[in-house]
Image (cartoon, rainbow, N blue to C red; front, side, top):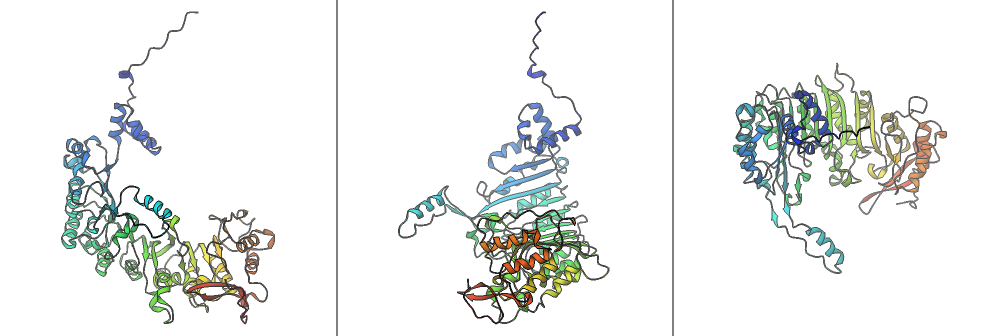
Length: 575
């Protein structure tokens, strides 16, 4: 048999990709981009580079002095299909005084027709307070460990940035917006208020006013809100976000301590309410006292087309209603939602259809004191939520979700606080609570077994429960995240079989014992097991309604005592 001829090697010039319609290449590139391999594919050959560039719709551009030559030569002509551009500014690489030269460079040398294709502009920024030499703090930690006497001197910053450098300069920003008349989305990074607020705000708002297709706008400061009246004529503006500078937006935020707060003023509320076509409004505070519940009430009353309202951080006037003997310094935080908590409302025809209160802060730095008082939730139900829920012909609220840890803080033993919250719950089709803390340590008062049972009958099972003299690290797992919360839900009635809870390694013996009672399905119904849990936690003997966990104030802290009868004066179990 004659030997087989070896195949001829394909020359590089012959390795041509198939001629495919642009729609097919666009689909291929989208699939490759999802696998984060697009950059490697683009560099594989000149033909692939040309194909990828011709189909690219989104660009992320880092503003650096080194790129100036490239942008002056070609600009966005290399990416003719690009419709969305993100500009990334690092204030350490490009100083505030110079960034204006680079903002418009990618667009300056292309025609108006090409610039009109860009419909979305996002600017990201990284700001700095103090800058230290690399490794300065790790060296300091080593010196601290080795020090046997006085504390070693702290590292000194090599550079300190002023708060006036922590925003986009107004004049070049306005020039950039005027270069892109086809924009329908503009997202600007959080920043400090402008140094010259009247002139700078006028320039930026005047430029935004020319964007007749603008639908989605994110502004960097509440300081700009009063001038939103200039945008009331924009027919398509339905989505607005205001987000001032937060701690995590700045490297070494401590340098900004004492900075004037960026507060949403009455004029700013009026400016937002002038945008009568708004359907989606998001406001994020960086500290307490930037957004008040009275502001939110006005948005609900004055924006008829609103479909979603999200507020991050909310100050209230609840403290003014509390008794004179309440210690204001302890209750101030409990009567407000800090910036890590987010209240989201869905609306239809001016009526609330969904309520979600959630924790959105960094979980790895989360404090055990990051909780929400049920007294505050009930106050918000009375003053903010129920007026937009119960009026006919309002539809029932689809869901009330408390995706955070709630406690009996700011509640009274007589139960008067519960009425507005009960009314709100009765207007909801579904209610879910993530964590419930009914310890007297958080309530700062006596907590009865009957009160605990009432709450669980009202809310259903929370995912986590803390009761009695359990510590802040203890918890009992009552249900999985997707398990229905209704209290009498049992295996065989549509609920999944309960699996034994995985306990945290530092759980106390009390928490483990109470968890075992709940996980024992032979212990009767869920209500019976709940009562068994309370007995295991100390509410044993005697009628349950007459038994309670007590509290006592010790060394400026509320500490919890085990169960005792109402006439008990035994202090032996004091924590």
